[in-house]
Amino acid sequence: MLGVAALLLDVDALAAPQRNRSMKLPKPSKGPRGRMRKLWLKVDPALLNSSDSLLISPRLSISPWTYESSYDVDRVPYHIFEAKCERTGCLTRDGQEDMGLESKPIFYQILVLRRVKAKRQESVLQLEKKTVKVGCTCAVCPASVTRQAVLFTNQ
Image (cartoon, rainbow, N blue to C red):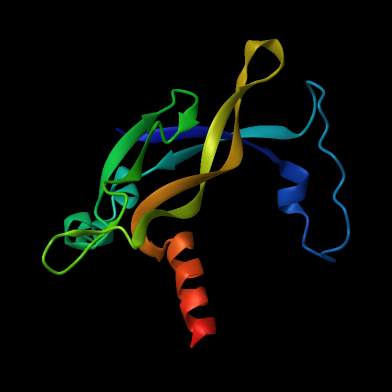
């Protein structure tokens, strides 16, 4: 499936050379005779499915995770897979759960397109940031940190 999105661009802004970064561009005309033009953006699905992510196995981590899909019909991409930590603690070499460490999600910001209603029942795509969970890692529990600080100060 090939994703397609419509973009609205100001033709005058595209044609004008970049003079000064601090100079503000005029707002595009909103009238029917304005110079706005609709362009189509095609997204190649081969670019979206990177094989690099397959090299990271969540099962080999001491803080294993699984992936859950979130679906939103008004978002491009529709499906986003997010990590969910499988354990509260982290695994030791022998596979036992160490509750002195906490399994915590790793967050990453991505850009998505959100379909929003415009005038005259039309929809436009708006660029948004979304924070997603991409994996899990181990962190020292706050109780362990406090306990270690007390032990350290008593020495």
